[in-house]
Length: 144
Image 1 (cartoon, rainbow, N blue to C red):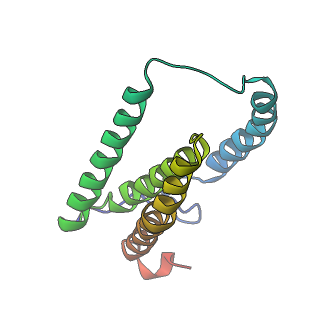
Image 2 (cartoon, one colour):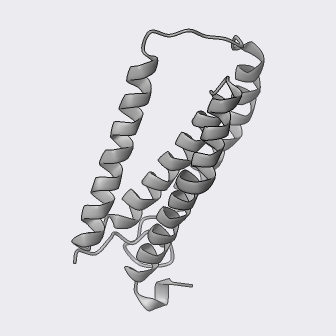
């Protein structure tokens, strides 16, 4: 099995983490005013002709990520933690948008049940697999 690159900054030849930390923190901080502005400026209603394509495309992508994660798990590929984590994130987004974008109460009830019974538990499983396999792929001294 191929080794993943070392991202610890305390080892010779490892990728320094400080630049990544600064970029990630800066983007997180910048998104706060952007989110406030969006929530105040976007219209409450929006019609689109691509609604079915957007959801079908998202679900097709989600299916592709599940298939890739299944393949990575079966073949013990080193990229399993990344694909499992990304699949979990897509499931969280799916649950969020299913619930938020439903306008009829029966559709909202179905979206909440789907989230509680399927999407959120599957996301938790994906994150657990990502965490466990990422830790398993590192030498013992790096697991602190």
